[in-house]
Image (cartoon, rainbow, N blue to C red; front, side):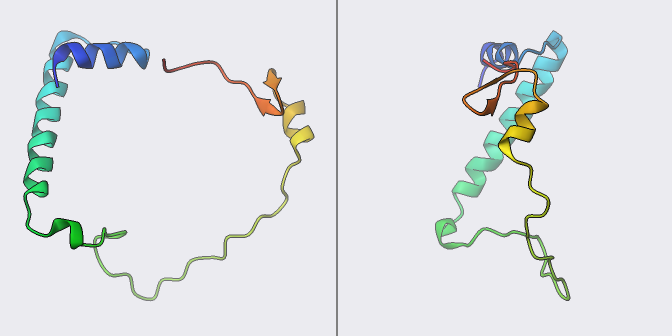
Amino acid sequence: MSKDILKMLANKMMFTMNEDEYDTLLEEFNIILKQMDLIGNIPNIEKIEPMTFPFPLENVSFREDCVVDELGVDDILLNSEDNLYNQVRLPKVVE
């Protein structure tokens, strides 16, 4: 990772930072990359199942996922300023 790459990515995401912020972000990325290398060097890491929660959950129940009061496509498109092919068009924010 280099400062030039960070500047290019920031430009594509349409935000700017000062030079000190780029330096700080570059240091943080380097720390993260070193941590990922350490994790990748753990023996048999590919055999470990990823965790959803960092601790076991007890007496927890999740509500049923049900659709209620679903809007139709025509109702949604009535509220949009710009649409095309039954999809709402939004302004581009990332290149």
